[in-house]
Image (cartoon, rainbow, N blue to C red):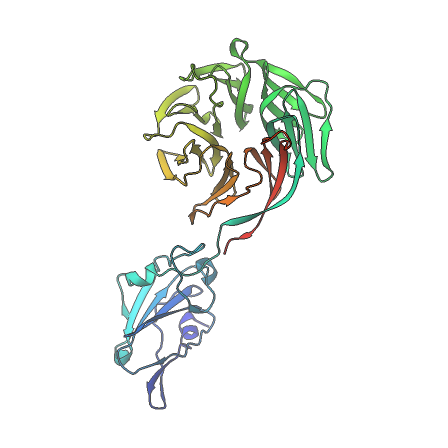
Length: 435
């Protein structure tokens, strides 16, 4: 069956006695694709969706004059537009999941009282039709607290080597494992006092800590691979795989940026805010071999590293420094102390400013978006097709300093807020899209 004969089942009933008006479709429709048609009358417009090969039957009671039909033909299927066959109901453009029609491959128009003249091709569809918002799937999450497990002493680093478990490094060199059996302390022969940790594999972790860069696993112990430059302790690391092995960058407490691996350490530079030792350590996003974006909290600067080339840039606005950063969809996303969110790609783009202060961690969500948290007890999601979702608060747990993915759950590290309320690990599950 051709697309033309399939669409020929379109039937418009004009209110002109008992006779029906049969209007054949335009012959240039694309086989297999979606079709959208609008019925315009003096009192408004109704929009319908269908598929070229599904024999849609449309029966519309309209007056015999003053009706204009507009038809859009797409190469992609109806599902790609987020629509089902039938009437398309407009919604507010502010509604979560609201979307608009893309530009069609072809567009046509026909006046019902001059149907014998046939369909007229349009150079472009009507602007109001493309601007009409309709309901699509909402990409925003709500969150359910699954469990909260008290943990003292204070958490220093959190890492998820595999979907089924998380390691928490605590003050004084303690290491704890969270899995389906609960929270248990791990005993190792050599336990670095960690500040940051990343996982190369389920069996191999890189840890920034006292004395320098450590490598190993909680079950087998850690060895000191490199001492920090000038004997300084290492505060943060970032890296990933290359053809020569894992590439690791780090920053010390004194602000020295170094590439530690592969090969021998190479000192790349030193941050400016040396007089501000109370500032948090830098945040880093490793984007690929030799490519790194690093922040300097307490200043307006961000550092772009390419190989051994070091470039200091300013985001151009008052931010008080980027306090959280992560690689997201091939770029780096950074969140400033006072709430602005930036994307570092070919240039610097400000995505928005939800006014959520004191961010601590950014994580990619796997769909081109990201989620971040902070000491205000919030979870903020960004989706590229929607923007910033409604902020979700976990008010009884107001100080999140750490967050990692563990399978489909988020594990958050909470700081102690009172003498009788210790720090904790909180398992949070994205459970559904917001209405």
